[in-house]
Length: 192
Image 1 (cartoon, rainbow, N blue to C red):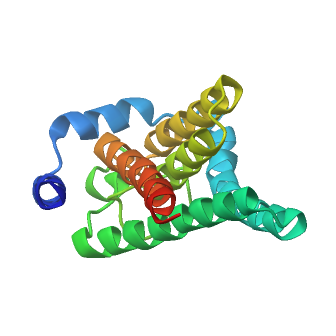
Image 2: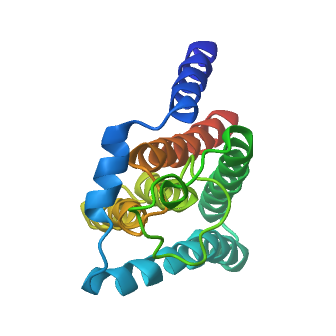
């Protein structure tokens, strides 16, 4: 099963790397307009780094203060998910080296001057969905799930609007982030 999932993802990444579908470029181009959301989307992108490091740090701090096994296990699961997500996302970006939309289509503007590196997968989307999934697994209440995934979805859309990611970059980033969060949660539960 694991080999088939890895083979499927490898094939999917290969197809996306080999060529960028014109529909994706057209979709980015239509979303890529400067408007009142552009500045908000730039700030939203910055918030991912704060949230992606802040939530694991707060969960570790809580575990140190409370010194109970549940807090320690939660901190371990969340931190493992975030760290593995960052590592896998970075390795895939370096492995596939997919250019960003604005680098391939002159009609697409880059509204995120901090965007560097490669496009596939979206690190912002993978981090946002990783945190959303971690929080949803640890605190399975509607008032955690709904805002977490709304935030993550908005982050994904913002990366397209800013011209720095294709829709497939965002979708694959979301799958990687959510999957690694779920995997770290499942492994820790199995071990303990």
